[in-house]
Amino acid sequence: MMRRRDFLQTSLTFGAAAMSWMVLPPMSARAADSDLVEVTLEARPYRYPHITGANFNGLAFNGRVPGPLLRVRYGQTFRARFLNHSGGPSTIHWHGMILPNDMDGVPYVTQPPVPNGGEFIYTYKPDPPGFRWYHSHVGDQDARGLFGAFIVEDPREPRADVEVVLVLHDIPDMHSLWAAIDGKSDALMNVPPGLNMNGMHAMPAMRGMAKRMKPMPMSDEVKYLSHCVSGAAYPHTRPIIVKVGQTVRLRILNASPTLTHYVRLAGHKLRVTHSDGNLLPRAVTVDALRIGVAERYDAWFEVTRPGAWLLESLMGEVHDHRQAVLIRTADAANHPPEVPPPSLAGAQLFTYLLAGQGEPMPSGVHDPFGPANVRKTLLLGGGKPGDPHWTIDGKIWPHTPKIDVRRDDYVQIHFKNPTDMDHPMHLHGHVFELVEVSGQRLKYPLPKDTTLVPAGSTATWRFLANSPPGRWVLHCHNLVHLMDGMMTEVDYVQRT
Image (cartoon, rainbow, N blue to C red; front, side, top):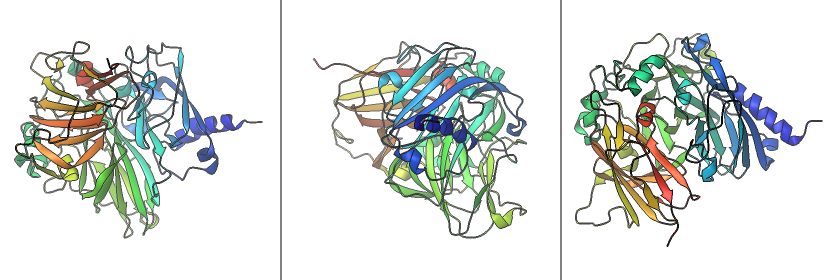
């Protein structure tokens, strides 16, 4: 007879994989009532199928990209048995989770990497609730396919009529990726049309980006073979079937190695309620989402009429295999879908300043964000021709300056970014508040674990150091910049 534990493990390892990118049904009472959720995640070489539009030998968890969609109820204990047959050392990082430091999955920092043929048990209580994800933290393995979505269900939250998880991922030309890591790429930028005509040229946060609007080769850019949504490229993505009168919740993850994505749904506006799985202080309604690498957004819309609409990540390049998914009512199976405008000119984008209601910094105020025990300014650098290094305070990992904190310290980190690249900076093991962007204070600080620090500008984080003690890395989530050294640590030390 199958034990309860075996049933849950089997259903999550295989059943969840079969629905890893589509509509989420309510959790069954059996799954929600258990105190322990167990899964097995096995990393192996993987040949990408034709529906991705790429001829690519990568890696996968449990035989598919993205890996199984993991779901737990907040308060359950989660145990993952990781079997590594990737061909090299590997780990799993649980992105956005506050968990024991030795479960964080950073090689040579929180654990030795798991050797090929080895295994490791990750056990913790997933926290906080919301949209998290998981991925390898070794080399280029996440770019090759070792990633997946993780939902920590909050029983206090109301459900939408239809809930969907969508993972945006891009399949790289590995020669181009490694050329970018070496600072010798000739790949072109991929920026959607109209971006510099959306009022962004007037905003300090976008000035550096505006300089890079014209497609031109950049030494750190990557060529991509295809752009996918949850394991397929349009028109091979599976349609989402909805009914008139339903409310739809889209949980969208950008798992790209390097690309910021701009997502728009034809014929609809999107009401954004969560960022990185965390409830925003106020919902905002926009035409399109701007999603940095590793960011997640929960966006809602209502189906008010029958029809078919394309949800698409807009690209600067023309590609046969589009990063899009069809959303339609049952009676519109043979209708050509409405498509988003190809240009972002005039579109209202989700921005931190919009969501947080940016306002001028108060003059003459010593602590505009509140008192802090630890203040640190980090200077982001790199990207010079012929130099592959991406730096923090002029140093590359592991020689970057570390940030020492003590438990219950209030910590303020101010980023200065004089480079011409936005940097998606991520702090492990914490949820921080984004309190400033481009010299403007946010009236409503945004709870985040990853933020784009705008090119040629600034951003400021604030958090309470109340996570489990240990070494928590802070790094750029652009894989090229991470591998070229843009990483440091927040280290918990004992009070003396």
